[in-house]
Structure formats: C-alpha cells, structure tokens
Image (cartoon, one colour):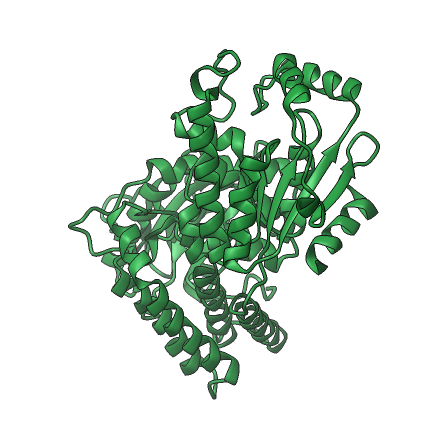
Length: 526
C-alpha cells in the first residue's frame, strides 16, 4: 500500500467494491488531517476522522453525524451539483459497507456522499497557469454568494470584535504547542496582531453592526475550488466550527488572495480583489485586509504544523510540512511590514486606453482601481454594464451626479491610501478642478501622486469609441457625442501637474512586456 493510502484498518476494510451500493470503477483513499475521502470512479465518500483537535471535535458518532449534515447544508449553497446526501456506514469495523443499512444493522459512522471530480482539477493542482477569465468568474461567484449569505444579526455573537481576536491568539498558542520553542518570528507576529487589533477594534465592531459578518465558506483556498464544467466551483465549506465560518467577508477574501499570492499568482489575487469590489462595494473593509492576511497565513502555518506531527506520514512528508509552516510564517511577516502606497490619476479622453492600461497596472503594482463609470452607476443602484440611454448632461450624467461621483472617488481613495493600499483612480480628469482635490489629498497624506496622461489621435479615438459602443459588456457609455464634447472642452495639464505626469502613447504602445515593466518601475521609484 502506498503512503497516500496508508491509514487505519477500519478504513482499509472499506476499500472493496462490494462495500458500495453501486458500480465501482476503482478505489482510492485520500486523506487530510481531519478526514478520509474514498474515490470510486463516479461517486465519492467523505468520512470524518474521530479526532478532537481543540478547534474541532469529531470524537463521537453523534458529532460526526451532525457535522456531516452541516457539511451538506453549507456546500449546497455553492456547489449543489457536487453534494448529494448523507449515507451511513453500516456493518462492523471488520466488515463495513456504505448504507443504507440492512436489517438488524446500525450505523457505525457516516459519510458525505458526493459526485466525484478529478482532484487534479482543483485550482492548486491544475497543470497550467490559472487564467484571468477563471479568476474573474470566481470573483463574480463569491461576490454574489457573500451578498446573499446569511447575516449575523445584532443578537449573534459571531464576528464581534472581541471574538475576532480569540482564534488568532489560539493559533499562536497551538503553534507554540506544536513547535519546540516559540520563534522570534512568531513572537513578532503575535505582538503585531495584538497592536493591529487595538488599532482596528472600532472598525471591526462597526462592520459587525453593519452586517458585514456573514455565514461564509470559511476555508476558501485554491485546494477547495475545483474546475467543474469550465467554472471555478468552491466546495468543502468549513462546517466544524461556526466561529470560523461566521466571519467578515474581508477575512474570506484575504484567505483566497493570500493563497493565490503564496502560489505565485499575486497579479491574479489583485485582479480577483478588484473584480470582487466592483461587483460588491466594500472598499471600506480593505482597511482590515492585511490584518486578516496575517491571520490566514498563521492558520495555514498551524495546519502544516499539525500535519507534520501526525503519525501517518513519513520523514519526507514531515519535513515538507515543516517547510510549508515556515513559508507561511514568512508570508505573514511580509504582510505585517509597512507599505508605501501612492495615488495614481488617469487623464485622457474617452477611448484613450485608460481602463486597459489601469487594468494591467492594478495587477502588476499592485493596486486597487476605482473606476468613475462603475462608481457612478453604483451610486444610482445600477449594475456596471447597465445601459441608461441618457443623453449628454442628463440623468446620472448631469453635473450634480458627476460631482457626487468624484467626491465618492476621493473618499474611497483617502480610505484606501490610509490603509496602506496604492490607488488608481480611473476617470477622464479633463479639468484641473476635478484633479485638484486628489493632488491635495496626496499632499495631505504625504503620499506620492502621479498622473498618467493617455494620448491617441482623434481618428483612433473615434474608431475605438464606435467599436466599444457595439459591445454589450462594456462599462463606459461614452459615445461619439461625448468624445466630441471632450475634444472641445478638455483642459491641458498645468505646469505643476506636468512635473508628476507620465505620458503614454496608447495608439502605438500596449500595456504588456517591457513597456508595462518600465511604467511599473517608474511609478514605484518616483
């Protein structure tokens, strides 16, 4: 028997075709530190290990049955096509079988019955690189899921500020119990976590009161997301501890983004974050992002340490787990370091390439992009792809609506930069009056400010605007009439502004390769 399938005799006795109520194409046992999963070819069965790890308790049959039911309920929210039902394991430990139980038999355990999928299709195992299209779809899925997930009401203790800190402290305690001596790294991260908690406590409590604590997935990393029928499908919600599942949605996103970065996909982590925020406005919550990323990295370090100390792994696997633990502690340390955010403004006519370039930059810098077209529609409760068919200066495009849009952009920019996050404000900024409050904000916060001046010939601009008008999924509604008015009324950058301006010829240059890297380096070094 291979190391992968080595386990207890009880589970081994299920690895026979006659133990299942259907055709078996093959049998394979996979396991985590808390469960066994038996693959049969078409269907799969997940059985919980009889363990008590402190943060979870599967030690009795009743508890395992309860948490099987919870697992089914929770996962049907995101992956109803994968989760079928709960089946008993019947017979005896020497001769077990998957139910229903025969006459005279009673359950000796329970299994979550699932449709089998290829484990190699989980996003942490895919042979090729993850695609931006897949990450954008995943962001849409999670934004909708969080929007409709159950909210922890005022009567619920979940997510209150005092309880947020508790599992964080427990993680450090459990790590210390697993590692012979607490490292300087752990001690520094522990101290940092306590200090950040005191700084953010009021915001944590506000978000609980505002309904930002919801019944989330709870364990959202790439190993719990499968490519299923060309979609990224989250599965394996955290069922065993409601304290770890009823969390701020920022904590959930922090886990996924941390995992993407750990696997070398920092650009996709920020693509995910930007896409999610455009669909579900929660920019205020990003003040908690690094706080939760440190927490999530410590969680993964703890899980690796637990795995390293289990008896069913060999010396090579143990060392790999210990190396993973150290890697996650290094990530947590990186998240705890001060950042050097800046404010970036776009400047250019409709069709000049602002959104195309800012999309590449937000992933590469990285940064959060605030698009005026998206914010404007959100302020009027419209989806970003909505077509209002409103004329120049009317409806959501009148002067008052424009002023509110820029005020909202300014407010978001202030909060994000204060949270240590670089911001790209993607708007035309064709008048100095619009730009002035933003350059003043950067000066007030003592942060660098840059203006990206996008340039293209009038013929090119008209062609791009007309082509965009034929597309259904674009955010901007600016047509030829808008462009013609911009050409007449556009104000040149002032001499003072030109000092902080980088010009981009979007007609001849593309945001790829060496040109993109040159711009990124210029923004970082200025």
